[in-house]
Length: 238
Image (cartoon, rainbow, N blue to C red; front, side, top):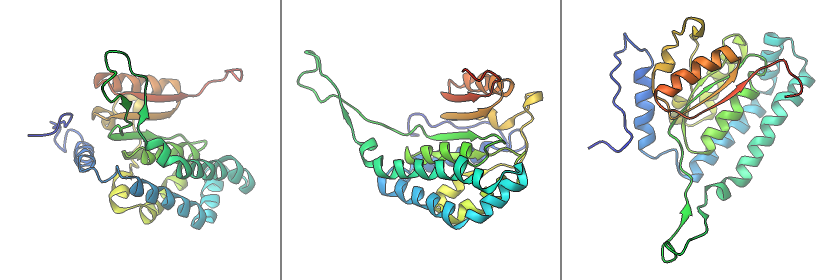
């Protein structure tokens, strides 16, 4: 008997090229390998090593993609990611603890607490103007929470996308590296042919424009998938 929440996808490879990938990630997540604190911390430390050892390559990739000066890359992307990693590593054990809650008269003799559980398979779609920060910040959050991840960086920042695809598997556990598969095929959102979105995910994180955000929200609504949308705009007061 399959555990509750396990979905058997009906897409064949010819109909949906990502169905097998999503199904395999969900099966791997059900094994529970990504849940222990030690395992999560090891993967977060791997991201730290990636930032340290590939520092020059990161600078070069962002300069090629965006003509961004090295000092701007350091302060606008790398430094912020390092701070978030330090925050996660220092507080992960506290975040994972059960949270005691107030008990009513009806539940006075019971144990009442909030237990934080990972969502499952998370889809992260990054943007082009901050391709490292906007991609790795949700990734480290998803790993810290014990999820499996499919990572879709922006194809417009091709050098950064290629660097992440080639380097990340060297620093993350093979199972996690497989979970953070980077997809290079541009998603044709303009024609609503994003085959990736036809699959059921347990959480979606997207940063980009309003038009694509509406398409992603529509696709997520079909599966009642929770999501976070960070959508661009031209109002500096918002």
